[in-house]
Image (tube, rainbow, N blue to C red; front, side, top):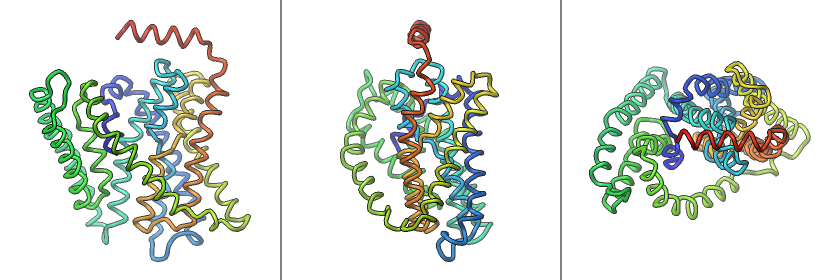
Amino acid sequence: MFIVGMEIDSSTIKNQAHQAVIISHASIIFPFFLGVVSSFFLYSSFAPTNIPFVAFALFMGIAMSITAFPVLARIVHEKGLSKHPIGIVSLTCAAADDVTAWCVLAAVIAIVKASTILSALLTIVLAAAYILIMLYVVKPGLNKLFSIKAQNGEVSRSLTGIIFLILLLSSYICEVIGIHALFGAFIAGVIMPEEVNLKKVISEKIEDVALVLLLPLFFVFTGLRTHINLLNNPHLWMVCLCIIVLAVLGKLVGSALAAKITGLSWKRALSIGVLMNTRGLMELVVLNIGYDLGVLSPEIFTMMVIMALVTTFMTGPFLNFITKNIPEQELANTENAVNSVA
């Protein structure tokens, strides 16, 4: 989550602010609404005992709303769309989507954990205050420190230690406040210096541990929690199929319609909708949080994991189908134009 937060480029979001706000918020609101509506039908049969309907409905809504920014970025790069408007807009919207969705998730976690409305509001206020302090106090100080200490884009051992300390402290503070530690790691990544070379150096120091050791363990952990054998009759598989359909409709239709409203062609709008439907790792993180909080039953957890896998696997083939008629010359012209401006 720290690396995901660090990969978000705030300057890119600012440059595409109008489209990013409209598309990213639509890509959250549509599936969130469908997730809440589906809860009316799922709650009585699949919600764990003693979990209030509001907590279950809110978590189903946010679980439907996630877009996996790292996975989307990799797909855009592999498809050669990094310099194309489809890729640029999609990455910007996914970054804005991640920021918004994780803030909403923090509020949902506060509501789920709180015993009263007053304590939930207090947690949300404390979380908002913490975010403001990190963005407007800690981040400027960190930028000054790196400008002095990071010579020629090199990060010393002492700076690496400071980075890890900020990561751990941020995670701990968020856990104490009443939202999940992963949100603290995400915010710690967001406040890292935005200089490209420094981000690359920091990523190289952390990614080896995260990708080689921690990420495989996380996937194994999630796999052990996923019990396909619980879906042991046609009715349960039909419910799983309905969840997949609602998730796809919410993300794809919401994003595509919003993209069309901002002035994009239907082909580009649908391409963005397909890309925003990528859930991947981020969805699994959210589902594990829901499982740990006791909001998601083993059956619903398994169905949602299947949904995350299906929506991620379908992105490549669907994107190929929609963009197959985009001329190679258009991609080349766009890349040359971007490079000349740079």
